[in-house]
Amino acid sequence: MARGKVEIANVNTANIKVLSLDEQLELFKRYQSGDVLAKEELINGNLKLVLSVLKNFTFRAIDLDDLFQVGVIGLIKAIDNFDLKHEVRFSTYAVPMILGEIKRYLRDNSSLRISRSIKDLAYKALRVKEELTFKNNREPSAVEIASELNLPEWEVVQALNSLKDTVSMFEPIYSDGGDVIYLADQLSNDDSVYDLETKIALRKALMEIKDKEKYIIIQRYMIGKTQTELAEEIGISQAQISRLEKNGLAKIKKMIK
Image 1 (cartoon, rainbow, N blue to C red):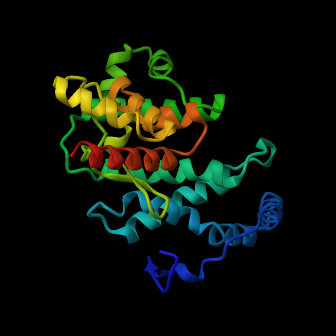
Image 2: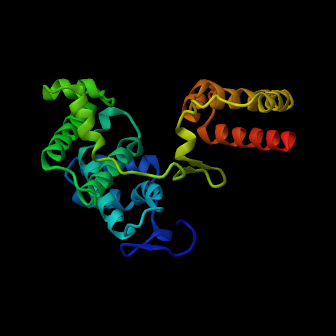
């Protein structure tokens, strides 16, 4: 999106200004002191946050112009509610609000038919979730949401799940420019049934690859851990886990052919 002239909702993405931390801080101080023009500068200087969120939805058959405008609404809400006392980056605060606004739009325009009572309960649960997140500075559990609504946990979970889109296991959910992480990479693998010959060949191949690649493959395909869990455990990015896993599997395939 950043290369050349790409227009979304009549906005040339190549010309979007990116504010420095000092510029952003000064504009927030001005806006929160009553300077309305500072708000416009904050919006225009943070449009790339909206574009970064939109990258997660480019695979959908949806008008990106519409999603961009919805994302800007989320950005404006974030600007209106941001508190400098929190001492967090504005992007950290704004991205979840932009994402939430887009997801709400997609739910409201979903082609799936959901009963009104379940949909109403789901929206109540989402409002409670947002309130608890803001209050406690963390995402609440389903138990906490159910407690606030005075309802059984399963009923709340069922309502929230009814609004989730059905997606392909091979849907791309992240890319760092080279390596793509698919939804399937985030799912645990509990299938441990292999024939004896395959097990012997795999064991020999595993002994030949690098220790880190071997550890990741064992944890992913024998223990059943996700890439997210391994990234947190080892202390590297999820993209690096994906790269090491793919490299290790490619080596193993060559050795057992």
